[in-house]
Image (cartoon, rainbow, N blue to C red):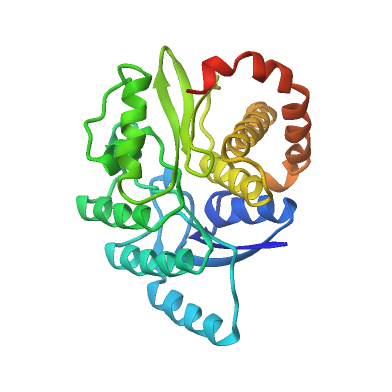
Length: 291
C-alpha cells in the first residue's frame, strides 16, 4: 500500500478537509497519516467558528515520526493557517520531494475572483512557496490567477490563454498543474498539464446547482488516490470529476449541507466502471479535451 501524509485542517463539525479525505483514500487502498494544520470548530460557511493553529504540534510530531522512522510515498497539503506555517510545510515538502516522494498542493485561499476573508497577500506569497515545493498543484481558477500574479477575468479569452496561465504556474517550480472551476467557451472545465506525460488536457463538466462544502477535498482525495495507484494524471482527474458529480447528485434532495462521504464510498468503484464503459465516447471527443 502507498502511504500518504495529509497536511490539512480537522473540523469538529462538517465533512471537509481531513474528515472527507481520509475515508476516500483508505477506500482506495492508500494508507493515510494525518497532520492537522488547525482544529476548526465547524465549516466556515456558518459565519461563526473557532480555530486553533497547531504549528508547534506539527513540528514536534514530525520530529517524533522521524525518530521512529515513518516514511511516506506522498504528501498532500491543504488549508494552511499562517505564513509561518506555510514556510515550515514548504520546507518539509521540499525535503520529501528530494527523497523521491510526491507532493500534492491544494492552495486553499480564494474563489469567485477574491481572497477568502482573513487571507492576506502574505498568505498568497506563502502559497507560492508551497507550490514551488510541489509535484502537482490543484488550484481553482481564482487561486491560479493569484498564484500566477495575473489578473482575474470572468473567462479566459481562449485555450491559448489557459495554456499561458498553466505555464506561468509551472514556472513556480511545480511539475504538473490541475485547474478546477475554469470558465471557458461558455462551459466549465478542469484543465491541466501532466508533466510526466507532457500532456495538456481540457475536461468539460456540467455545473449542478447547489453548494456542498468539501467537494474540493473529495476531488483531491480521489485524484491523489487514483494517481498514486498508477493512473495518469488526466485519468485520475476524470475519476475525481465523475465521483464528485455522482456524490452531489445523490445528495441533492436530502436537505443535508454536507456530503456524507462514508455513505457514498461505493461510488468510487462505480466511477471507475463508468470511466471504462465510456472510453469509446471519450476517445471520440478527444479533440475537445486535449491539446
